[in-house]
Image 1 (cartoon, rainbow, N blue to C red):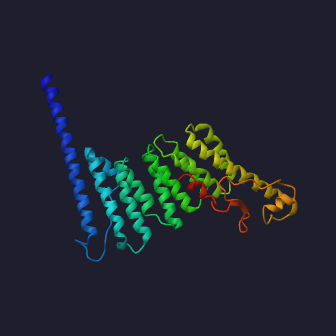
Image 2 (tube, rainbow, N blue to C red; image 1 turned 90 degrees about the vertical axis):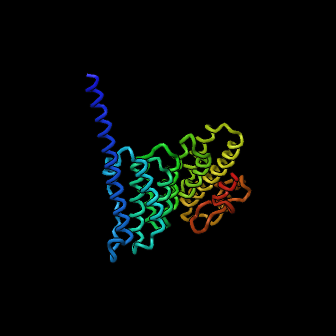
Image 3 (cartoon, helix red, strand yellow; image 1 turned 30 degrees about the vertical axis):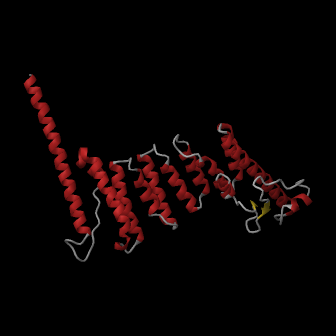
Length: 296
């Protein structure tokens, strides 16, 4: 009985080894064949770009899954330099992302792959930013333990001008214990840009109760005061508009109308004003980049 058990155990090990070996051989064959096609070794007139299905590779690669992931990761990095092979930039972006998608499906911990596919190949065009966001959101399902992925999603939303979404993902990223502190302190600026200083104020009020470091608390309180003033002044400006049917030309008009006793002091020392184009209350220097500069 012992001899029989040992025999079947050895046979199972041998079968597993042969399966992994055959899987690796198939993978090498597919990869080599794909590279030959891409480099016109077999065909002179047409380039063929092929990435095997990731789910298929997960089975075929067996215990060599990390090695396979590294190969497609390198392939994706090299593909970033091959944009000239494509007449359409969208096709090139799809090709790059497909390689990184395969690498990350095989090994979700290759964090830089998310960066290359979701940030590096994305420019300022809406369709490309949307593609980067979609890739990173799918990547977040594969790897939900890295603060950088929601941070990069927020960065793309910021580039797209969706500041509320940017703030949402910055907040998700900042919830990780190893995330940098600036992710929390910069979120109110997004709420301001989204024309929702009230949300920035509420966020800072909550943050002030959770921060214990005296130096950080000092800057949070300064920002909190800045937002309190902005919310008050914009509220008075809206009240003026309801009373008179038009927006005030300047903050002094609020005092003349009896809605405000005095213009509050700007904690950054710049002074507040009403922007003629947007009708919003802003700081003369910050607008609100002073919120970020104040941290340096």
